[in-house]
Length: 240
Image 1 (tube, rainbow, N blue to C red):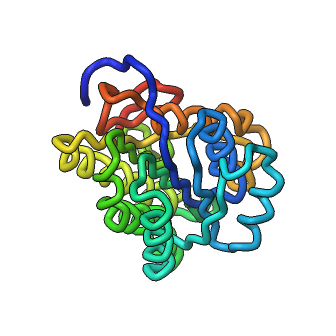
Image 2: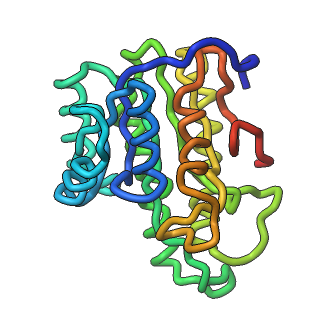
């Protein structure tokens, strides 16, 4: 990782995937509150438009963007829109995720479900970085945040949730690779575990959504001398 964190955080243009609810939606709200123009990615264009209208942030602070991270055409359309409207991308938050498969075990998992999780949780994020990299390279302060989970930590991993845990472990590995390859271009790439958060996926009993989202926003707004290639929660390193 790079040196100690310090200095002002950059402002600019951000894109958040899977953002029509839960952590993604709150990340959009918090980024907009920092003066960043945010594109709220949502597979269902109508849902995206409705949640943007209900956010109550300033006009054009958050903009709906139809985006399905498993659909290459959808990703390309989103990239073309960002290129035409802004000419660059400063922050990419890969938040879209599916299948917290608490009912499964590795010994007899439905591999079709595992593949489905990988398509969104790993390959979706990978495709987003590949497609938006030219626009990230046009930014002076590019940040990529992969919203991961401690369920993907090999240091603490046990049994259960094989589709979700495997996909997040793979996302963590991708984070390390991208950070190493983009370090010389000063593009910071980190993975963040927001913790157990009370969302539709996380269920009741977790911590407030605002706290989990703040952990993601921390990585999205790192200063230029911030860390890269790390795995964090609340700004503190986690074991891989």
